[in-house]
Image (cartoon, rainbow, N blue to C red; front, side, top):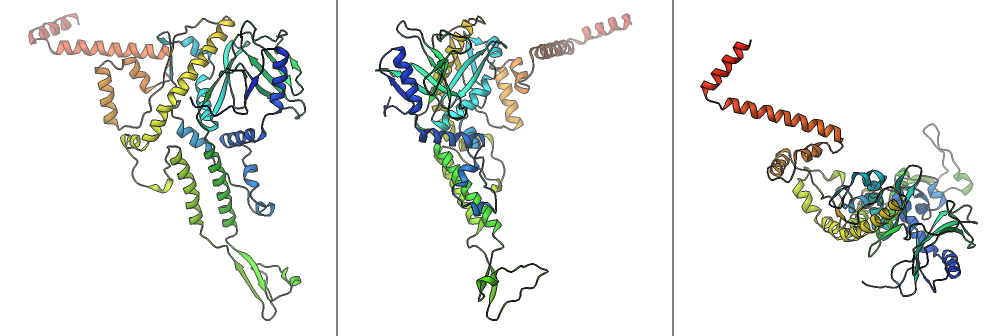
Length: 459
């Protein structure tokens, strides 16, 4: 592991003393560097497509933006979704050798939350994920935490505690939450605190002790962030606003020569005549440069950013036939390789998150889960023609790779257990009837004749 030193989100606690910890926590929150937080905030604005105007407006004068609105583009979420293919299909979480339907039911919106979490972790370079228990609905719920401060004991490389903001208020009494784990016979802590370092109990927990013994926060850390995508989005937003201004000014700027300044305020229009003194001129001057060249420059920004992140962009006017599934796989080979490199990060994170879930569910008396967990990330599939698809399914059925139940789910993944049972019964009945018909068709003629006479007598 390469150690480039601690970041501003890592705070060393000099000793395991409650008062020292409290002072360190309060001081660390006050010293949080605004620059790094602002960069992450900008990335989140562009990911969620909010507050983007303010990041573009600063590069234009107020007079320019009186002509047109800013024109930011939804580049960042598209890049994030295209790059993070690992959770494109929900992974199978195998607990003690099989998928646990009870755990799937109690872990509310886990698949959708982990998909968004993976995209933000790639974009920001690191992200935290909190598991919490909803007492009223008796289920696990999840929260993505882009801004978390970590606390370390001297000489340790794993966080001892975490804090994160829950209420900015009016920026005068900002509220935070702190979690720490059990360590050396000293119970972990859990409480709220404000900027002054005053702490408060959470949900009646007057002892302010962490009931789980471990922090309910897990994290993924990438070697680097993808802020180049955010900066590219800013550049594209600026360029697209410039193009909009250019379109707006295509008529040109009216210019007079040979007249006094006081005479330059002249009303014009198709129903008005402009009378100019001798030697004066009037014309519209349009900006130089073609809009097509400007659009190509915008594409160059997007294409270069895509290549740097192992992606490709297919523009709408590219034309031609759609590539086959195999051709798409070849074109996406770099992104597929990147997906493989993502697996170790998220497999480790899945195990740490599951361990937290397991402890929380056991603590609240919901269920006891096995420690045995394996993660099977879904393979990326590309479209096939009908003939290829049928051959693949026939081969899987013939070689026992796929069951008839799997085949039904292949065509209808949302089918309930009751529908599956009914369909399986229909398939079995049809199969039995077909076998009987085949047997009768293959019987010698004498037996078929006797059977026909028996049927005639019964009538």
